[in-house]
Length: 340
Ligand SMILES: [Zn+2]
Image (tube, rainbow, N blue to C red; front, side, top):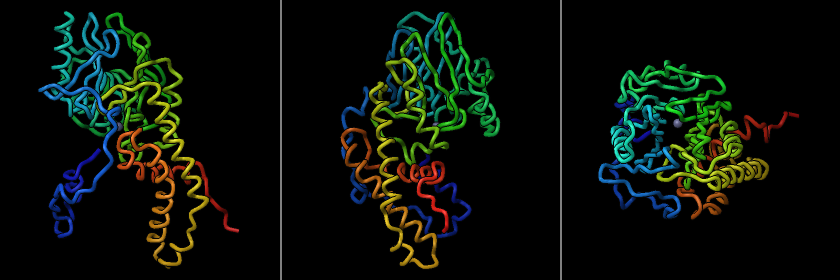
């Protein structure tokens, strides 16, 4: 995720161009969006800005209502799953609260990394050097590349599967190919009926901008099916304010399937002729407006279907449809025509 400030910082080299000047924002002129369905919202955060709750037995989750982490208390210490910087020091506060209430150690001994992104790991360094960090082998390569002191590289890596045993508890880590990123793993808690899979399904909400900025679109479309092949009742998606259910995963998969089906219809039914007639030798103008028409054709019915079902369907469905349109064209080859 990005924000306007970092976006503008990225354009600093062009700062002399007056058009990059800060635009005055006014609440009166900003666009309106549909109300959020109450089913998308989770528990209220406390005065410190976090909520911590039990998932099952000694597995807990913590949220600031936009990001999520999880932790498992054991007789030998705490295993933390992700360390989002937006939750930051509230991670240890949440752990302290639960550990004190249950008379168990509050010291984090292990951090499992879901994937390398800074918005999920940027508070890792708060837990010091004497913590065992665990991630996929590709996670180590990517973090070494990123060279960010806030995200120390994992000490323990695996390629396909690894069973992590801490204090008599069992966590099954698995890699099932690329999806959101090349290193995103499935974290299964077989004794807690829970699966953690981050940045795939954001329970109650449509994906973030451009299909969660997923690097591998076909891999991300296959991930819900792989997730559902595990036994679990509770889902930790890494985002927004509540846990997920199997039904949330089914709805997410259906939403993506609906976009794919409509994109195929758009590729067959939207006539490119007027766009190329109007823009002549400006091929990019023609392609831009033609694809915008395809995206609108494909996404309008999906937005209508999911308003009131998934939060922010009217905010991000069009950009997600654009990314899926490109994948349907380029990965699946739909709509490719050989010159006669
Ligand atoms: Zn991510």
